[in-house]
Amino acid sequence: MHKKNLVYIVIAVITLGALFLLQYNRPKDVNWFESYVATHKIPYGTLIANELLTNTLFENKVVQVRMPPFEFLNKENTPQGTYVFINDNVAFEKAELNQLLDWTSQGNTLFIASENFETDLKDTLGIETKVLYGGFEVAQKQEHQLANKILKGKHPFIYEKVNSVTVFNKIDTLNTIALATVEVPKNENEKKVEGLTVIKKPFGKGEIILSTFPKAFTNYFILQENNKDYTAGLVSYFNSSRNVYMDNHYKSGKAVYTSPMYIFLNRKELKWAYYIALIGSLLYIVFEGKRKQRAIPIITPLQNQTLAFTKTISDMYFEKGEKKLIVEHKINYFLNYLKSRYYLDNTTKGDDLYQRLAARSGNTLEETTTLFSYIERLKNSSQITDNELIKLNKLIQKFKSEIDAK
Image 1 (cartoon, rainbow, N blue to C red):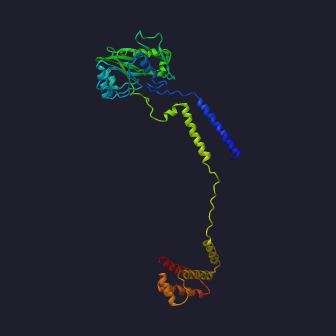
Image 2: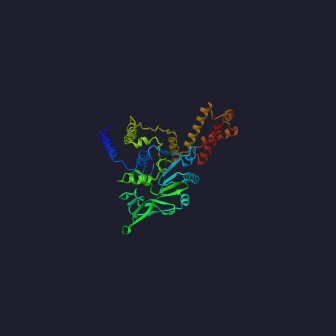
Image 3: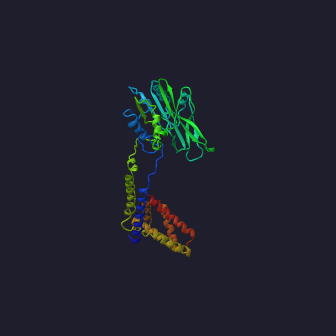
């Protein structure tokens, strides 16, 4: 290996090492995906809310449900208590919704925190929703507040991450209780617009609680100042003497990672070990995959120049007008061909010879006699014309074609 190539390799290795070091020490990017999964630690996961419910507010009463509601409520021992759904969008099948409403009417509590509700549910409860936008800013300052004076904090609970929020714009005021509100600023003169975000409504012997602000249960919201009091205030409406069933089916994110590469790519050390192994394999292929010796050049074998030489000589004779010599060479070549093929001593005279040659070659006696008579005539001629030369060639070729066909 040349010294120049070695220097280039060393420089490349040092550069790659520096890039790996910088990449390894770079802060990990924040995943802002709205998963709402109970085990996710990302900003929009619900790990802290589930730990708050399990370990503090409803100890030994929280049950994680990982099956569809239709299947869960069809058990032999129908569960009783509060069924909680938290996601950016919760939409039930019609039969499933009817089953949930029937279960609620038997004295249970249905809690749904979602930015959107299906039409059948809104029609059943007589509600409508709309979205309040805070203008074209990157984010609006939302001031959330609980309606209950006992739960209401000294200051509003702030959320600043998006520029819109869903609110209820139509409810059954006679049978509906407002639990929480939100205020968002408008561009003109910074006037604030208030909207209703959480309501409670009796349904049969039970009750339904709807929230248009599911982000109140995310890690990001709860960890902001005293926002955990807002989340705790909402769950205080659950019956503390009964079980709380946390839905894990209607989630935007995956609760379980099925890919075997997740373990490697999720841990920084294993991820970079995997990358280094791939790059090392690539370098091995590049440098060790080369030939250990120089490539052997392909030498083209010498071509048979007999035909080219013959063509050159014949062209020379033809251009000089030496038709007599061409005829003599052609006749001699033909006679030598017959001698070497049929081992004949004399191929110029004798009817007996013509008969034997005709029988062996597959030509008729007449054709054989005609050819050799013509050969004798040309051998005795002093001048040969082009037509005579062409006729001789045709007769010889026809005679040989019968031999080859035999």
